[in-house]
Length: 184
Image (cartoon, rainbow, N blue to C red; front, side):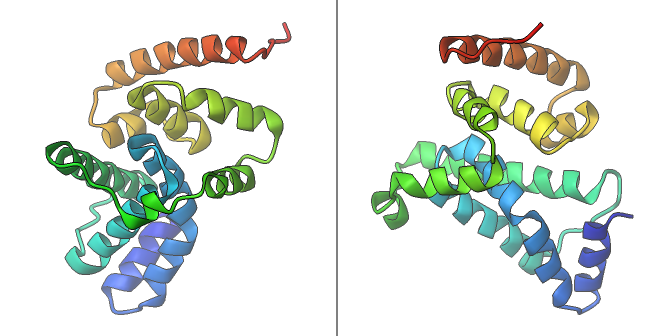
């Protein structure tokens, strides 16, 4: 059992420090994952908060069919998809989005991706389709296996393999446009 699962079990048993441990461990990676759905940091932060509120209020059962992190990211994906479904029906604009300063996203991204190459990769990933961004982020930045990625994205393993292949090809093309050259 990983640390997230142990902390969640402690939380369910009444130890509030458990949920604090989960939040401090996963909040940044959840925000960056959720950006692939909504496209901006303020909305991703709101969605991340919704994920943790869901854990605190609903207390969904963790059955250990996957790692805790995979389970948590699957919940985050569901929260994001619900948000997008509702946003399609009516245009949602939060006050944070209206007051959003572009520098905030760059600061968070710079903290997470400390080298220029990684910033270039992330900038090029922003030009990809949402599915491509998600599969690359989950596989390479979060280190999920194809099976875990498939579970989070609600796709089959084969679909994830195909998506990953096409996403890498598309990313490579975008990086060439930015002037990145590969060393053979």
